[in-house]
Picture (cartoon, helix red, strand yellow):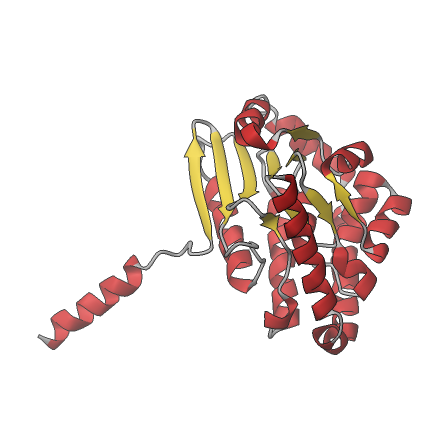
Length: 270
């Protein structure tokens, strides 16, 4: 009887779903990963780990030709990091760096479907994909910037490649947030669709990438220097460790207010 009980316990542990903070599925040749971590889709240690695993699974699925990342719920693609809940900053950033490396090494075209606001590390995550499609009314930015919080996906390097050093510095140090149309003008997103049919319009656009994997992979290799990117990751870690105690205590209230303000603006526009 004891042996049977042990087998049942093992079976229960095995049956427990691994993806508890995201959803992953395929629609024809398009793979979709939806962040699903409460209403703000915060990027915590578990979600980052699960996202890395989901990307690896999708990469190995030959039926998937294009891979999309989006957020569940109407309010946020992702509000970024809930800094007060990060107990091991170094370990967390090691995980985000591993995720960034996986995402940039994928052989398949990647697209961020920014269904609503993308802030902080959520905004950073979107920058790592080949393309970004935004819903009308979404706001994008790094409100942590003016508070001295660190990036976690080496965005000072990635943003330099996308919008140039001048705009990148303003985004990451002034904490300015941009509406979807301004983001389009700056090159932070590639297309803006009405929110009412966002996923339908986005899927039509994404489908055109099904045969673009080789050229996009080559474009990434030319655009991103592996040694420079590695150096950027190292510098990011050094900076985060230098200020780790400070940012846990300062700016949290202001950051929460910034997120709440953005969320409320979305409700009014909706």
